[in-house]
Image (cartoon, rainbow, N blue to C red; front, side, top):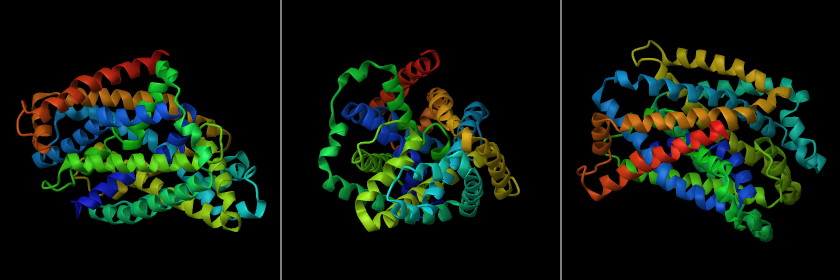
Length: 413
């Protein structure tokens, strides 16, 4: 069990807030402007939070029952597949972040960012990336443990990381406020683009770590006295705050929105304005991102282990080691010239898996027994109360419609 509500929230925030918030959200916000931010907030409220609190409630309810439902096998398998796929390329990105930490001293020495990105993920840096990938998985396995241990690590790392990122955003925003104009531009024509909605919805899933089983795994470790709804709202708040703060830093360098890996040249460019402090600031920033990556990867690993292996296995650590070995080996094919595969997995493979899992879990939660468990864990007084009806509309009517439309769009367009 988590020792406190704060431990649970920070662990869930650590699992949710990561490269999706720091790298993916800012370039999408720069690409689409205020329309993306507003739609993203709307989708968090009507889609993200209902799914988030449902997964936590399901995990806690299943833990109380003390048995596995045979009908849960398909959903459990899909959650596990999502976690494994994300782990393969997420830890590779984690190794790039470690590279950025290691090479941060070169920023002030060069006075330029033209070669910084190549130091991080180019073919020439592949040997370094492989070493850092090994280091990344080693760090993940060292952090692997029970809920109390994860909670202590997350409270420290998440608070420090969020403080550094928000502080940098504050100083960058003050130093160049006019550069924030692309974030507040309003182009509502993008609302007619299917890709816009796919990008916004998939960002909600990545940011909150829904449809991968992490929240259900952690829900089983949440005390019965804790309010799940308030926890979910706080997790979503931290998620949005970090995403917006990272976007402010990203925007102040007038960068092109051309993908995840551009972040290794965009952010260092912002740090050059700190003069002689450019290297230390770069170091602190990527170190804070590294902590968030660490929290995310061991959360995915913990979830996959709990889902794929029964609780009576002799050693979760053995399962975690074997799983890490597999994902680490697959990750080697994403280094150097294989780095382009990361974008393909991120934009083509993962959205299909996540959206499919989202549809399946909504259908599973709609079952009478599961629905009763959810409502009980969420402290809804009755099925006919206003809270129950409002929640049912969001989770069982609106969510599946949105998810099916998004999945069809992703497959056929």
